[in-house]
Amino acid sequence: MKPVRWGILSPAKIGMEKVIPAMLKSKEVEVYGLASRDLGRAQAACKALGIPKAYGSYEEMLADPSIEAVYNPTPNHLHVPLTLQAAAAGKHVLCEKPIAITAREAEQLRGVAKGILVAEAFMVRHHPQWIMARDLVRAGALGRVHAIQVLFAYHLTDPINVRNQADIGGGGILDIGCYPVTGARFVFDAEPSRVIALIDRDPVMKVDRLTSGIADFGEGRQLSFVCGTQSMNYQRVHVLGTAGRFEIDIPFNAPLDTPTIVRLHQDGKAEVTTKIPVCDQYTLQAEAFGRAVRGLEPLAHGVESAVQNMKILDAFFRSETSGRWEGV
Image (cartoon, rainbow, N blue to C red):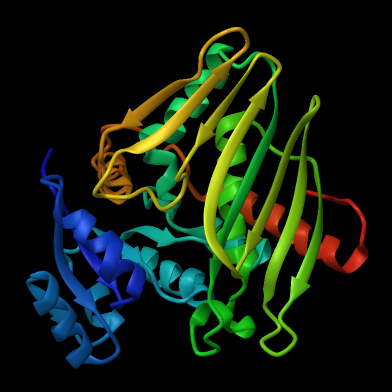
C-alpha cells in the first residue's frame, strides 16, 4: 500500500525511544514530521531520528495538508484535547494510552467527524503472543477459561516524572493497570460488569502506587491483577482454564533482541514452550492503523473500545473510595 504520512505530536520519551524507531522500520509508514512547542527540541528530535520536518508548534504541523495521521504521545491530560484538535484538522489519530483521564473526557472523542479514525495505542493487541492467547481460548484449547491473572510492576519515585504527577493523570492504574484490563477484554472477548480494588497511594505525590484489582466478566470469568509503580520490575500473565493454562513470560514490554517465551500447559500433556520470533509490536500497531486509514481493513479497536476501557478504570477508582464492588 502507499505509505501513510505521519506527524508526531511532541518528542515524548515513549515516542523517541520506542514508537517512532519502530515506525521507521516499516515500508508502510512515512514519519514525515515532528512538532514541539519548542522548535529547538523538535529540530533536535528530528535530527536524532532522521525525520525530515520539524515544526515549532502543534498547530503548524496540524495545518500541513500532507500529514495524514498523527501519533499523540503527550502527557495524559493532553490526550483528548490534542486528539480533538488533530481530528478537527482532518488527521487520523493514534493516541497513546490511556486515551483520557476519565471516561467522561474520553466520550468527547465520539464527536470526531465521520471518516476520521481515532484509536488508543495498546500495542500488545498486535503482538503474536497475545493473539496466540486469544486464539487458544477461542479454540477451546484451555477448556472453559475462567481466570486471567496479571502482575505488572516497576520502580519509579521521581516526583518530576509525569507518571508521578497526580493532577495530570499520573499513577499506576492509568499507566499500567490499563494493560491487564485491556488484555483481559481482548482474551475473554467480553466486558466486565463490576470491579473492586484495593489501592495504596504515595503520601506525598498522591498517585496510586500499588493496586490489587478484580474484574467480574460474568459466567465465572475473573481478572485479578496487581500493578505497582514503586516495586521491583516484573511482569507476567497467566490465562487459566478448566483443562489448561497459558503463560506469557514478558507480556507487555516484549524485547527486541530475543524471542518472547510462552508456555502452554494442558491436562495430561507435557508443557509446550514456544519461542515467538522477535517482532516489534509498535511497528505492527502502526501498520495496522495505516491499513485502516487506507481502507484495507476495519479499525479493530476505535473510540468506543477506548471509552469502555476508561469506564472500567473509573470504576476501580470509585471502588477505592466506596470500598465496594462498583458497576461498570
